[in-house]
Length: 275
Ligand code: ASP
Image (tube, rainbow, N blue to C red; front, side, top):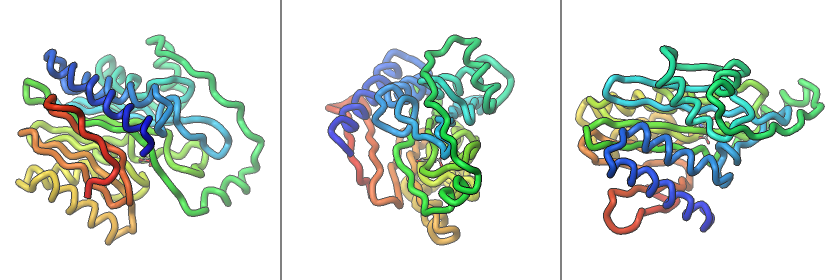
């Protein structure tokens, strides 16, 4: 984690916490913390989102709140700075959960979200893209947040530009409710990062919530599912896990995961190893 990323994480934690302190709902804190990370260009989300193999920047994001189990998400959205706000608009302004592709982009045009020019598309044959997509994958830099507000509601969100060497149109776990994020006041809130294909196959965020509901601590619920991810499908991921009573865990089976937390006392804590 670079110093700039550390600073950006601290700033995002402060933005989120100060909103909660003033009585804002957990979903607002999650959205605003993620916006600070999307805007920095320092992570693989928003201004820093990586490109798909045809040179396009298609992004995914989702948000969920745990009181009424409301959720919103966008997938393969292009040309905007803040996909997390697009996801929150889907949650707040529609009866839907997920909008995709050009129609998601059209939806946010209606709300006049800040735009960002798309890079020019590359002329690459589909054969070549398929070959490149089969090379070993790497990941990194998806942003996410979980929060608990003064009314006892939890929320989770995530925003990403995906993984390296993605075929055009590839969608990962991030916009899939239950996979990349889940929030339920009776269980907790979870936001995942890592190779989305594995996270989807284990419905990881919801599975961690189910462990919390059974009475496991955030740390053991996360360990349980991350272990299963490695053992069953050689997956790779990290999780932010928050229980409704405020206990939390930052857990990962990747060598590093830049993350942090703050409960308003002292300075926000950030680091890149939490095992
Ligand atoms: N989970 C994201 C995806 O698969 C990538 C990441 O977390 O870095 O799209």
